[in-house]
Length: 251
Image 1 (cartoon, one colour):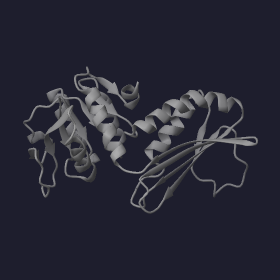
Image 2 (cartoon, rainbow, N blue to C red):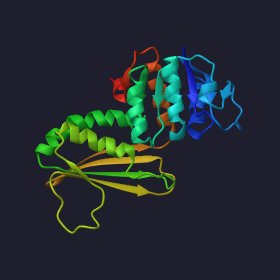
Image 3 (tube, helix red, strand yellow):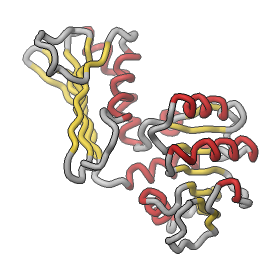
Image 4 (cartoon, helix red, strand yellow):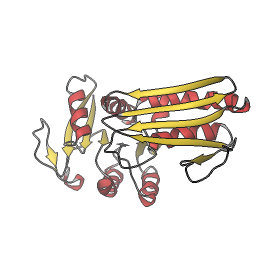
């Protein structure tokens, strides 16, 4: 049994993960952390991670960037592995994540979906062949109208996967409205759509002469991210200090 501390337990994703774990025979929540106390939970909840006295095998974090520094300090001090799902971290915080990984196991990915991470793996295999054949590459991502950042971290991760597999020859173009010119061969266009309640759609388009190959991923519920985080937590429990990501989980 994997004992989990849920950091950000009263948020939307925290409550979803709590629901998913109710019937899980391999993992359980032993404590939660959240500044908001207006939710009843079947486990003890602390307002700050510093106040948490419960031992666990791993922390799942779905909180906010403001809580990240204290969480990392606590995980390093207690040598507790942590699955980081919070986005929007500053450059300094990302550096702190890497530093924390020297003391405890830290897993962080741009997207916790197993499907997205399998797509990243497939893109690394396909990109060199398609790029050599002269295919142009475009990425279109779609999210709900409340999302603040654009393009999404997942879209950038998809572009990075293609670029790394192609020896870094590409640069990214986010807006063509200011320049009237033909697209260059060594660019990856990244477009963002915001509207409605779209959970997350990502298309990676390889457009060649007389044919188009599209890699698609559609998230119909945020549960896919919660399931991935739980799978990651089970994987990370007991692992030695180091930096991990979802590619390690899916193998």
